[in-house]
Length: 259
Ligand SMILES: [Zn+2]
Ligand SMILES: [Zn+2]
Image 1 (tube, rainbow, N blue to C red):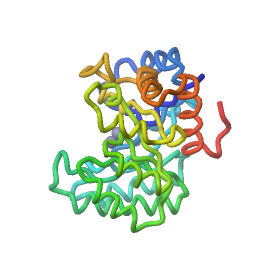
Image 2 (cartoon, rainbow, N blue to C red):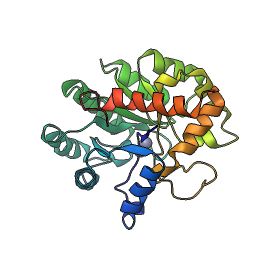
Image 3 (tube, helix red, strand yellow):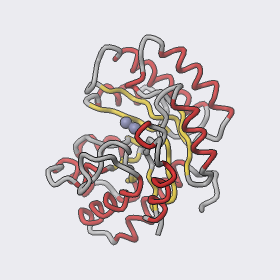
Image 4 (spheres, protein in one colour):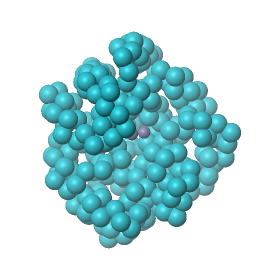
């Protein structure tokens, strides 16, 4: 039985002092494949260094996060795009739109997202979509492209929105929020969605699952998320692990050999 953490920000400062321990604890908990989303041009070399240090365990993505989009976004995008052919990236991301934190650069976020959807098509890579308080706006841009392979990470929509995402062929990324007792909407989404369309993610260091809520999140907590999903869906822990891991490999490592 192996698990994947399909969205983990191991390059962030939170892990700068104990990353080897974090990765060891992940492996002790059978979390053996870690997918690292990129935020901007500063995080890209850090992600690279980590993935080179842990080959076959850590896999890099390249993209510009909506929270990193400012008036300079075109320069950032051109630098990130220049790196795409040089390395073995498993996805474009994370990208998308976000109206939760700040809407100052929302127009630029929309443009940056569209550009990255076109990269996904050009480089034949899946896309990792971040959307917060902006589901409709994100969908409208996506529907204007032919990109149909990827994940809505940390999915926070309702069942109708989940149906729309699944009908397009996308996966739903499910994180620590599913372990919270009051997360009724997400519980309904998990019951509704087929297991072969769910991906497990921590979004570490953010959104730690119960009983670690409010503390630093890390990939070793993936089994807590898997357990909550198993209970909601009535599946065995082994099926949850095997099926969600197969999903992640199918999406991100289709050309790579299975570990
Ligand atoms: Zn995100
Ligand atoms: Zn993220």
